[in-house]
Picture 1: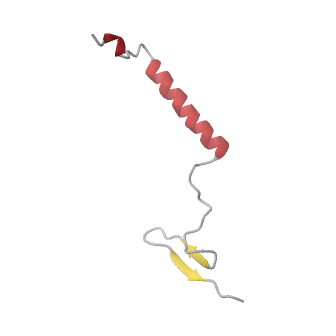
Picture 2: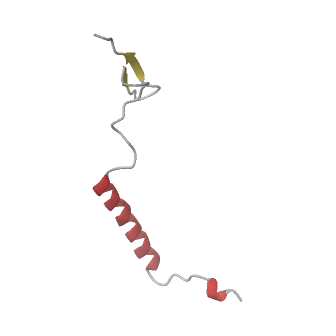
Picture 3: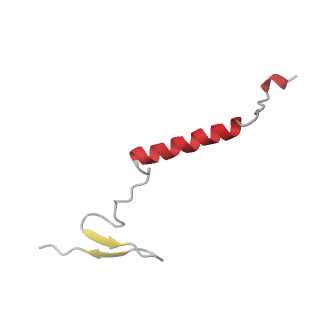
Length: 66
């Protein structure tokens, strides 16, 4: 009864679809960069200077007003 709803992948259709998907994602990353911002420092605002640590929380120091 529902045979017409089934999607049968023939041969390498799945491989071609996955290849197109991977190529699209790679092309997007190469053209527009990653969707995550890496240039934003960890911190509370512009008056703070923070350094990321390999393990644990970042170390933040408040800048002195001159």
